[in-house]
Amino acid sequence: MDPRELYQEMILEHNKKPRNFGVIAQANRHAEGHNPVCGDHITLHLHLEGEQIQGISFEGHSCAICKASASMMTGQVKGKTVAEAETLIQEFRDMVTGKLDTKTQPHHLGRLTVLAGVSELPSRVKCAVLPWHTLHSAFAAQETASTEKEF
Amino acid sequence: MSNALHKSGKTLPGGLDVDRVRADFPILQRSIHGKPLVYLDNAASSQMPQPVIDRLVHYQTHEHANVHRGVHTLSQLATTEYENARHKAMNFLGAADAREIIFVRGTTEGINLVMHGYGRAFLKEGDEIILSAMEHHANIVPWQMLRDEKKIALRIIPMDDTGELLLDEYEKLFNARTKLVAITHVSNALGTINPVREMIATARQHGVPILLDGAQAAPHIPVNVQELDCDFYVFSGHKLCGPTGVGILYGKAALLEKMQPYQGGGDMILNVTFERTTYNEIPYKFEAGTPSIAAGIGLGSAIDYITGIGLERIAAHEHALLSYATDAVRDIKGLRIIGTARHKAAVLSFTLDDIHPHDIGTILDHQGIAVRAGHHCAQPVMQRFGVAATARASFAFYNTFEEVDALVEGIHTVQKVFA
Image (tube, rainbow over all chains, first blue to last red; front, side):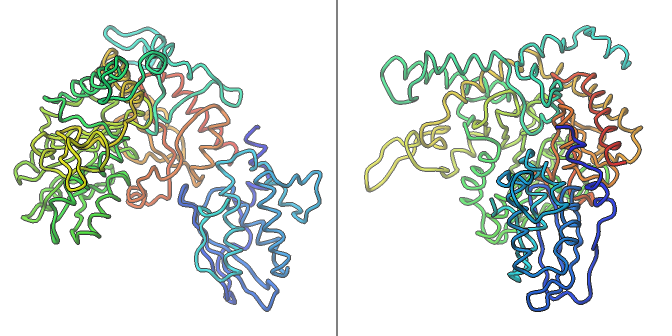
C-alpha cells in the first residue's frame, strides 16, 4: 500500500485543521484516552442532554491518524443519541480491525470510511480507535480510557 | 575521511568490508513493501548472521540434551557447549572468572536479579540508590519496586540539553545512605556514551557498588569490566546479533557470593530436603531451571562473530555512519535531533516539524525503512526534552552510507506527504 492511500487528503486536512478542537464550556462529561505505546493522549469533552449529544470537542497530542479520527468522529456524532453513537463506535472498530467491509456491508460510517486503510496496518489500529474508545468511556463517565485493554 | 571515499565502496585499510559483512545476513536481502529493506532499528534488536543461525541449527540437530544433569554423551556435549559460551562471554567482557558470568533472559532480567539478590537482601529503609535521568524503564522500574517495598529513596543524576549527565550533580548525590549506583553505559534514546570510567571512580571513592546497563554499549564499543572496575554489567544477546531470550549479567564474585538467589528450582541447588536446601555455588546459584541452552550457545557464536570483525572496527564504521547521517539531516528544515552529546553511539533520535513519530515510522516503513517510533521505554527522557515521542534510526556495522541516503530521502517523502 502506498502511504498516500492511508494518508489521504481528507485525513491530512483534518490533522492540520482539526474540527471541534478545544474545550466546550457546557461539557458535562470528560474522558481521557491514552495510548502508552506511542504517547497519543487526548481528552474528550462531551455535552450530554439526556440521551442527546449536544456538543463535543477534543484536545491533546496525537499522531495524524488519531487526530483525524477524533476530528471526524466529533463531527459525525454531534446531534446524535448515545445509542446511535454506540453503533458508530462498534462499526468503526469493526472497520479498522477488518471485520466490517464497508464496500459490501451496510454501515452508517459515511466519510469515516476514509480510515478503512488502517485495517492493513495493525500497529496503527490503536491510533484510530483511541478517540472512539474514549467516547465510549465518556458515556460511561469513566475518567480515563486506555486502548491497552481493548482488542 | 570524506563521504565520497565512504561511498566509493572501497574498504579503507583496516576498515570494515561492509559488502562482505552484509552477505552474512540473509534478512538484509529481503524487501519490505517492494523496497529493499533498510534496517535502522538495531538499538531495539539487531539481525542475526548466517554463522549464528547455523550454530543454532547445528545444536538442535546434533547436540541437544539438558545441561548439568545427565551422564550420557549428549548431555555432556550440551553442557560443554553451553559452558563454552559462558567462557566466551567472560572473555568478551574481560572478566577474570567464569563464575562471575550469569546467564539471564536479557538485560531486564539481569537488573531484576541484582534488585532482588542485592537490593532486597541488603538495602534498608532510608537507604538511597542513584540512577540517571536517561535510564531505560528496565533500570527504573525494578528500583521503584524496591523503593516502595523497602522505603528507600531514588536520587536522579540530571542531564543537560545535549543529553550529557551533569557529573558535578552526580557527585553531590552521594551520602552515607547511598548503597548502589545503577546507570546506563549508553543511552538507548539519545545515544549518549556516558563517562562511566569517571563515574565508577566516583562511586568507588564513596565505597558504593555500581551497576552498568550495557544493553546499548556491549554491541558497539569494547568493554572490559576489570579495567572499568564496575561491580555489575548487564547486556542482551539479541542486540548483539544473537538470539532473543538470553543475556549476561556479570557480577564480582565477592558480591555474587553474598547475594541471595533470584529464583528457586533445579540447577541452583546442591542438596534439597523438605527441611532445608543448600544452594549451589555461583554462578549456578542464580540459574534456576533449565536455561535457554540453544540461545546461550547462539550468543557464544554471536560473540565469536562480533569479535571476529572486531569491536574497534565496528565502532569506527558506526561512528562514520552517525557523523554522515547527522550532517545529512542537519540540512532538513524542521528536523530536530534529540541527543547531541559529544560522545555518542550510532543512535539518531529526532522529531520532524509537528509530524508525530508514528506517522514518520509508518511512511518510512512503506519505503522499506525500519526505524523505531515512540518513547523508547524511556519516558523520563522524552519529558526532559519536552517531546511525547521521537523517531529513532539506530545503526549497526552492516549498515551503509547508501542506507543513510535512503533515510534522508525517506524523511523528505514524509515531509512531502504532510506538506
